[in-house]
Length: 225
Image 1 (cartoon, helix red, strand yellow):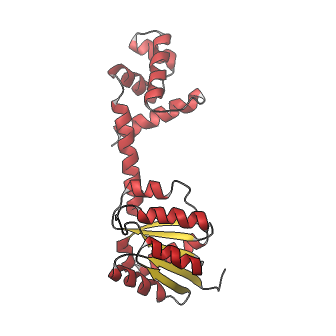
Image 2 (cartoon, helix red, strand yellow; image 1 turned 60 degrees about the vertical axis):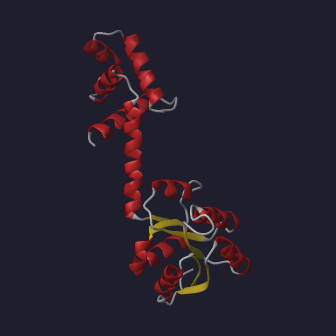
Image 3 (cartoon, one colour; image 1 turned 180 degrees about the horizontal axis):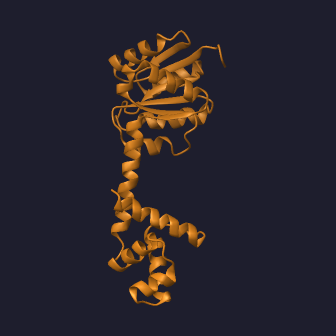
């Protein structure tokens, strides 16, 4: 691919943003903009005539301005698996990112529209997805991590005071027998509490050690927030 021009299609309903994106990428002699579209149907029509290397598209487009761009990204990936996708969004929304990446992150980038002012970053994303890689805007990554922290805290909130005591001792490195002695309860009771903890935290029936480690990570994550 080195030395070949990168063929690009752009889908964005806002004229100024669309032309701004075109200008940002067209300044690079390696980029050939095959066409632009203001809606999902227009892009699909362009795809009938051109198979690009990369599609640059907005998340919110007509008619509902919700997830048309994400739906379009899945359509393009389904019809043309080798085409890279760079999604632009005004919002660092983790739910959008998760929906976009549900079928895998290869060949997908998710950037905020403010990156249109950073041509190098945008061109880096285009190069990355063309090569089958992926890129997420740092603010998107932060939003995803924060969403994970909130989910972890929510699950821990469902534990009883006794279960939290057991989990706290588990985090300190104690085994079931030591936890039973510390709390003056039976080994059977500790086992019952740990199974309840695993269930409430949504930890699968895997090797016990792995589930203990995962449960401890949930606890430590909350206690350090």
